[in-house]
Every structure is written in structure tokens, then in C-alpha cells.
Length: 224
Ligand code: GAR
Image (cartoon, rainbow, N blue to C red; front, side):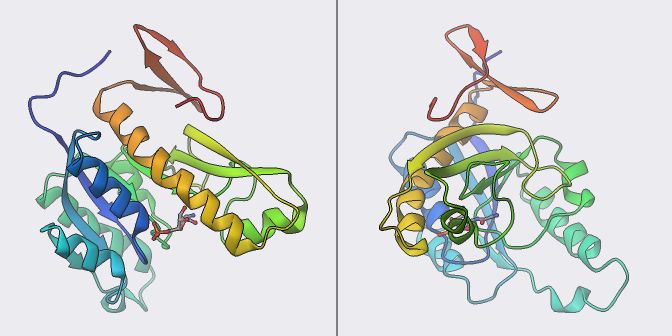
């Protein structure tokens, strides 16, 4: 069922670093290819360039310091409760992890079931975790790419929404491969969010069906 929205989809973005995926989302909104509005950008890193990017575009940005939450048994959950308070205060409908390098807990996942997306620079379920472009090269894969998925409590494990493939070249370094994958990330993430905004994503167990022209299908790599 597609959604005819009176108001743009309200996005909360969590980012820890450079923020190029955040920028791709901002650009897609500003050029009109993504019908959404970023209501808040939150970072666990005070110096994250992602916060500067938000500020430059007049978007509310918040540094949520993890330090006051450390040293207690429920450190990560307590941090996520504070995050959740902010996301709810700004009435975020969908949460985007955009280079957010902290594992989200059940606190956030249960408050936003199938309403948190992540982008990962590999073709999941291959190469979850960190340094994945280096691991892909070391493993000798011929094709890598990126994945947008819904976030569950397992790291990089949730239902896959869309993927894009990138050929691995014999001359590749981790940096060169990362740069080519990143180009695809910037193309893929706004499109996945737009599909959500249009109400075209239907989660059935592990599978995400994308409704196209009245019918639904499970997409293969590069399907969007
Ligand atoms: C991106 O490549 C993103 O896929 C990756 O971090 C980078 C962030 O770049 N995320 C993960 O590895 C999450 N598991 P950005 O800050 O420029 O968007």
C-alpha cells in the first residue's frame, strides 16, 4: 500500500563521523528526489563533521556525550534511552544510521521496530562489522557493494532493503574500493528512504518486499 503523505517523512539521523551519507540525504531532500525532512542529527562524537554539515543546512544538531553514561551496568541502554528521548521530542518517524559507529540496543530497536535503517559498505550477510572493504579484499571476493537494511538487535543482521554491487579490481586498495562503494551508498540510501516514504516497503520475516506498480517483489542486487 503506498502512502499519500500530507507532510514529508520526519527523519532522525545518527552519525559518528564524516557524514557523507548524511550529505547525500540532505542533497536528495534539497533537490526534491527525497520527500522527507531531517528533524534532528545526533552524534556520539563532539567533533563529527556530520554535525557541521547539519549546521550548514540549518538542521538541528545535537552532540550526546556518552561519558556521563559510562561505568554503569546498563551503559549502552541508558545512552539509547537518552537518544530516544531526543528522537521522540523531535517526532522522528524513521531513524537513519549514517556512519553511526555505536551498536544500538533493544531500547531503540523496540521503540522503532523496522523504523531504523542502516547503510553498510558490503553485500550483507557477507562482511558484517568493521574494516569490511579490507576484509573483502583479503578474502579475494570479485564483487562487493553496499546494503541498506532495517536494524534489529543483531549487528548488521536486519532485513535487507536494497543492495548495489561494485566490482572488485585486481589493483584495488581498501581505500579505492571504499571510494567506489561510497559512490553507490550515496545513490542507494536516499532511494531506500524514498521507498519507505512512499510506503512501498513491506517486511515479511527476513524479507523486504518492494511494491512496484501495484505488485510486490523481492529485489535482487541493483534492483533500484
Ligand atoms: C560508510 O561507508 C558507511 O557505510 C559505513 O561507515 C561509512 C560512513 O561514512 N558504515 C558502517 O560501516 C556501519 N556498519 P560517512 O560518515 O561519510 O557517511
